[in-house]
Amino acid sequence: MPLERTCCEIGIDLGVVNQIATSDGELKKGDHFGSKAQSDLARAQRELATKQRGSNRRRRQVEEVARLHLKIKNQRRNAAHQLSRQLINDYDFIALEDLKITNMVRAPKGKPDPEQSGALLPNGASKKAGLNRSILDAGWGQFISLLSDKAESAGRTVVSVHPRYTSQMCAECHYVDSDNRVSQREFRCRRCGHCDFADINAARNILRAGRALQASACAG
Image (tube, rainbow, N blue to C red; front, side, top):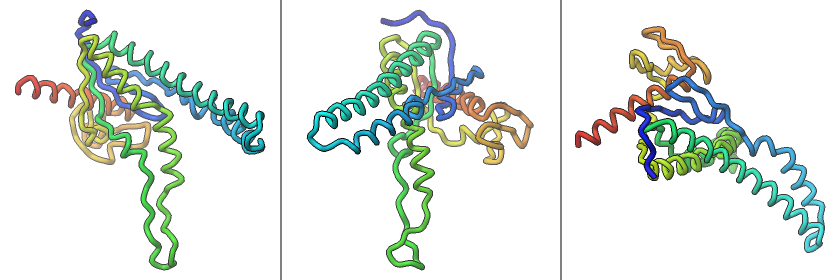
């Protein structure tokens, strides 16, 4: 059922530390349900490894591991439902990055070491695996899917914009420079001096790009 208009718009930058940063200046910390349950999962899986195959104890331990995974899945889905519902209630227009999540979590390919037969050069696979776990734990795909579904039934508009330069562009003067991103946290424009949280600056750029994309679609 369509909701009453709010005349409010928002841009959202998705992250792993902060689940979302908004063009309104809000940072929402991620819940990281998988990370929080990692010790319980590891303990349950160690217990499983000690149980004899085919035994009742092993069967019960398999069920315990499955229960923990289901709990994480339900927690993640419930959080995505709540956040997407809040955004749909509050905003008529929501702009997001068009993230290719499947590509982002793909393992890097190994390259042969020319100096050692059969060996591979270091490719950062271990570090990438940790980032992949964080991306999956953040539940971006599920959140975007729920947000889009709710928007359709509520008469809201959700647009996905290309992420190119959103983290490097100044939201004030639109100057693009990779050095504008001082750190993972800080943005400081090298031309106009504008300072902000990096993810909030990106969210403002995402909203601007979303408005441009919507205007182009309407004009077409």
